[in-house]
Image (cartoon, rainbow, N blue to C red; front, side, top):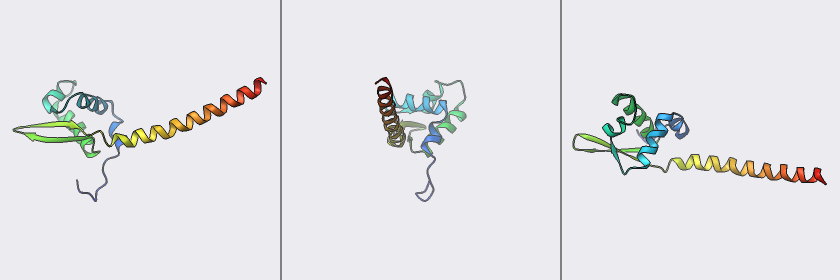
Length: 109
């Protein structure tokens, strides 16, 4: 994919439970070939490959050829966008809970 094309949205890429499981499997291993990843699911190679392509388009997965097989590994840096998004709303909820706590204390008095 060229730099002029926008990458697939990271949030879209992790929306599917199968892709989240692929991320987990790749996080637990240095890299894995397609046949080992496919063995973890009740679906065929083609379906797993399609999920890996979506993760690759989002920059979450890198691949490399080793002989006749393709090995996949996790590139976790795009997950930073999700971490930052969640952290923003974590601050929002902490601030609101502090305000609610203060309001409840004032009502008790």
